Image 1 (cartoon, one colour):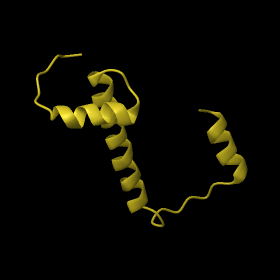
Image 2 (image 1 turned 60 degrees about the horizontal axis):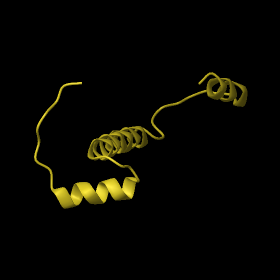
Image 3 (image 1 turned 120 degrees about the horizontal axis):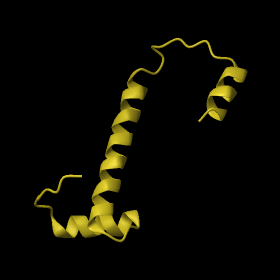
Length: 68
């Protein structure tokens, strides 16, 4: 992983670290970015809600869940 130098508000970073329950600044930044990406993906999915027709049976859904 490449190293980089960035300026981040120290108080905000400390609050993120505390809220996320992680020990290091790196963990806080990675977890915050993961959460941001997850939220944006969910927004994209919600934007398509009701616009896509899926014909899935309960059995198909169950099989998809179990295959993870």
